[in-house]
Amino acid sequence: MRRTSRRLADGREIIYFDDTADAPERTAVDTRDLPEQAPHSEVRRDPLTGEWVGIAAHRQTRTYKPPADLCPLCPTSPGRPTEVPESSYDVVVFENRFPSFAESVPDVASTVDGMPMVARGPGRGRCEVVCFTSDHNSSFGALTPHRVRTVVDVWADRTEAFAKLPGVEQVFPFENRGEEIGVTLSHPHGQIYGYPFVTPKTSRMLEVAAEYLAAHGTHVLGDVLAAERAAGSRIVASSEHWTAFVPSAARWPVEVHVVPHRQVPDLPALSDVERDDFAVLYLEVLRRLDGLYNKPLPYIAAWHQAPVRTGRDLAWLHLEVFSVLRTADKLKYLAGSESGMAVWINDTAPEQVAERLRSI
Image 1 (cartoon, rainbow, N blue to C red):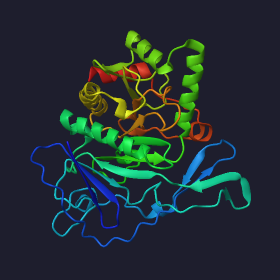
Image 2: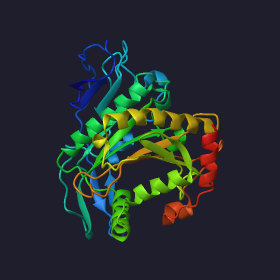
Image 3: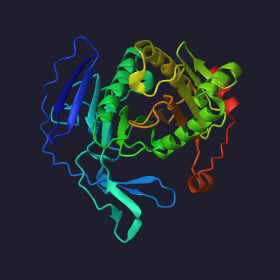
Image 4: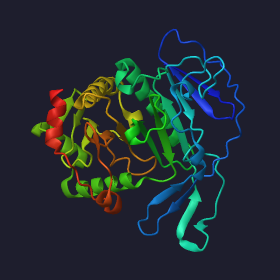
């Protein structure tokens, strides 16, 4: 794989990852007249929960559902410059033009004015867009195993790069797919967030893992994985190095966890054979998900990996894929119990969903 770093017109970094032998040298220049970036992200700590909240008001003006012929993630064509100056690409990564967190944000006061109990800080981190293919009408599930392996290597590359940035505490690669999820750009792409804090979900998972280890001497996800493989009723697909299953306490109407058989903290720690194996298994999982309702399934695919500096011995890398679609034409809304109390009520039985996915 060839890696080429360039700069866009406003100074943002763009990196081309080429996995085809005849890919051209990446020398195209961004000809757009773009204003200098001036993100003003900050974070504020909720005094009632202790959780950090990002404030990024500049994102209100970000691109929203453009027509296909104006997609900013497609390659540049004559008379139509985009975020990608080249006329084609394999996989490309660039800094988000409307980032939730950025390296250049200004300092802010340490507390909110008049609220000394509300800690405040700059939203210092990094946000990148990952385009999986230059084909606007494709999808992650339509990629070849070779291309998926490239994407895994890109995720690992960016995880290592983010971890070296001052202030970044956690790296989160993810993909949003489908308007029902809230996607505003339909081109096949994902994102990577470098948070200036450890996220609430990861913090809680590490706490539980520590408690379980102290009580049982083993890792909770390792025991869950072994039990799921033994039971078999919630398994969707498996391979030599990975197992995909519907979790027994699934929150979402469609939810699949893809877990490596070996405990590793993050994507860079995966071996070559584990990366190759994931590419094949994940494509099978996505094919089954799209077959559930005989149409492209809207989903979020979220990588859970260790924070940069804490809990690395307790973390167990895994991917969670879930959808808000509870039937072919009905959405699962996060209403009173879920949004108000964070108590999830699932309208589907995990065992039945797993059986349906296996049958596809």
